[in-house]
Image (cartoon, rainbow, N blue to C red; front, side):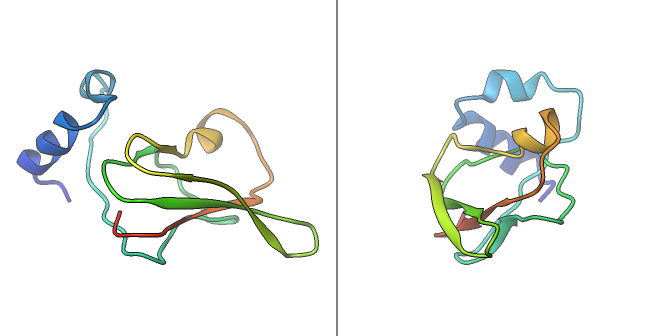
Length: 100
């Protein structure tokens, strides 16, 4: 969503509002439904996402293909910083557990 009023409203409730308002990049909103994948291995996701509302789970994929829970998060949680700042093997994925 690129609606400036909705973006401003979302920013006003975000603990990172000051930092994000000063960024020199376009900001937009993404809405996920429960069960949707937010980030996944082999999925080029060049977004730095900040959760405004809702819940998510982060999972690690083992060498044998099994997964285990690494973390869960809600408002204020950041997704995508690993991809922005480090090279990694893409063995972590995140999923919305509620509307996000």
